[in-house]
Image (cartoon, rainbow, N blue to C red; front, side, top):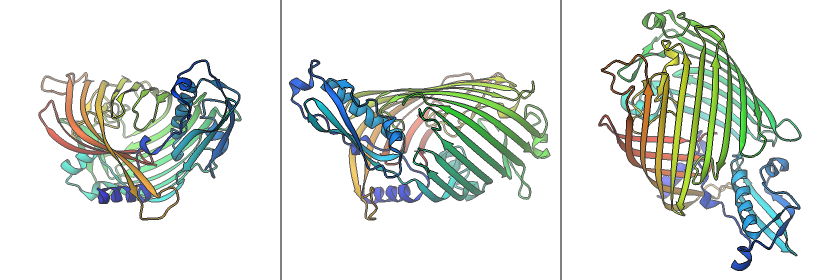
Amino acid sequence: MKYLCLLFSFCILFCNSVLAQTSASSKINFLDVDTTIANSDSVYYTIGEINLKGNKKTKSYIILREVPFKQGEQFTPRQLTQQLILAKNQIMNTSLFIDVVVYVSNLINNVATINIEVKERWYIFPLPYFKLADRNFNQWWNEYNKSLDRVNYGLKFFYNNASGRNDKLSLILITGYSQQVQFGYTIPFIDKKLKHGFSVNFNYSRQREINYTTENYKQVFLKDEKDFIKQNFMALLTYSYRPDSKYRFYSTLGFYNNSIADTVLKLNPNYFPTYTNSLFYISYSAILQYFGVDYIPFPKKGFMYTASFYSRGFQKDASLVQLGLKTTNAFTIDKNNFIQLHTNSTVKLGNNVAYINQPLIGYGDLFLRSMESYVIDGMACVVSNNTFYHKLFDFIFKNPIKIKNYEKIPFSFYAKLYGDLGYAHNKFADKTDKLSNSLLSSAGVGLDITTIYDFVFRIEYGVNNTGDKVFGLRINGEF
């Protein structure tokens, strides 16, 4: 166990993939009152001073924005306890801190002084970049024999919380499977009321291999050892609006210029909706999010959703409208058991024939566990991922590297049972197509390990409705 946690700790502190803060390490000091007073609705406490400690980089108003109460407000003991928990959760969900403690430090004449103590994360990360080019670990491991030719590597520089306003600056230089240059800057608040923000992102990439079609639920690739056969340029400008700590709205204008080699077009004339080897278009997208959960990366209680609208192009043949809805319901059974129910649905309206419009299940976060080796194309789908968790134990790793705020690194271990369902509609599926237009299912067991920096390491073993028995690894969370 010690060496396993040492390996995880090294990856967290020095690599580019990091995962989920456990609530076990974040204590909250509650009001020290007897049971009769704590349950009384006739006693009211008034919020006095609110003191912050530990935010050397982060502006105080960025933290106070997430606090659900203000000086002078009154609460019963029960309500105040709930407000302290909510404040801690909402401050943690900014992803600025590795630990947050919110408590009443003084109570005189029913006036409560609130202390908020935070431990800031590292915000500057010049790190090596190493990432699989394939859709998931299973595809790279089983189908491509762990080939290092299918790995992107390079250098990435992240400066999170650059001005203390939770803004983010990133520069990524990548080579290997593809060559990429990425630059982005995001500032969530540019006004005095802390509601409006913006971001800009640029990306240029080129690669010698391209997934040009799908056969038997597998991606089919074409590779050219000498020339680059696919090039993409992207520029995004995003406006963001956060009226409170739970709702977020994003509106994005995008500019794209994509091209493929003539050899690709000969193999699949329907790759682009324009039936040519290049596609320039302008896109618009809108996203509405609600986060009513205790902890976003690994919720144990609450509800959250993301509703999305995407429109591409003004040319009739190239246009695409895509609607999406993702939801998460988390239910706490008791202190050691909880349930997560995720749904993810997509509907596309546009050119059904164009290949770049068709990818559905198996890409991004549209997947069934234990079916990662399959891709299912179409224009509409729904996926349900359902998990029962049982907390096994917590483990505090004492870091042999003496680094402030990282002397002790908490880990939590959760056993899980999962069952997933899915359905993909494909207009062009024939009678031999057993996965499109039919119910998909999988079930299995696993282990999730959570620790600081929004890191969740998932180990899974299950079976799907085709009879495949699959062992899989998954990592959630990144800088």
